[in-house]
Amino acid sequence: MSELFSSPLFGLTLSILAFRAGMWINQKLKTPLANPLIIAMILVVAVLTVFKIPLDAYEQGSSIILLFLGPVTAILALTIYRQRAILKQYFFPIVLGTLAGALAALSSIRLSSQMLGLDQQMIASLLSKSVTTPIAIALTEQFGGLPALTIASTVITGLAGNLLAPFLAKLFWIKDPVAHGVGIGSCSHALGTSKALELGEVQGAMSSISISFSAIWTVLLAPFFF
Image (cartoon, rainbow, N blue to C red; front, side):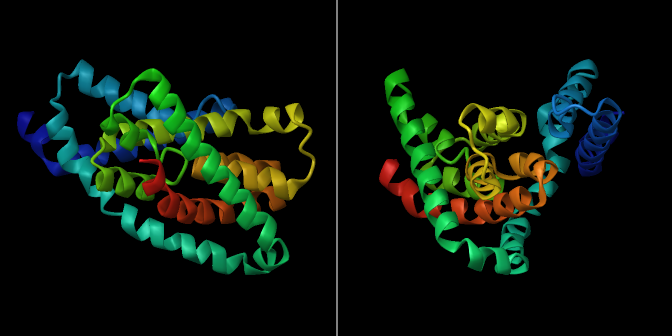
């Protein structure tokens, strides 16, 4: 049994099966609270705890998944290309909206971290929480942060956007689908975009484009907040 757990295929297979189970549960319950990613994380932790499997054994296989983060980042350019017609039509609102979103995310993290007395390593780990995971991890490693903390904060941020996007739009009287989509994509990356796609085609398109622009702004601005 120990040989099975020490195999790189164990961590990879467990990750895939856990996420597939999360998708199945989400389809059955049909509620945003049953997020596949969160369910997968809970299942993985449960398996490791029940069977007392060392985390290092799991990471040997799960680390293979990280190899795909680079190519996934490059695919963001394809998203912009496919939606270039919408981008041309709403270019300045998207650019300015994502800039405002990046500034709000970076400044709020910096200010709240200072108020809580967090050290530089913690700030480096949290600073990029509002952008897509591959870029968030790259920035964290550049600033000397903890990638695991970055991943956790990024997931929490995306899940919050997924759950709260409809409510916040009503609370602040946001009726323009373009503004709604840009707001979602700017602060809650892919998890938020999945909700934007449910809200409407325009919201989904705007959110998808905003992920890329928010990542660009964050990469350019983050050094000034660290």
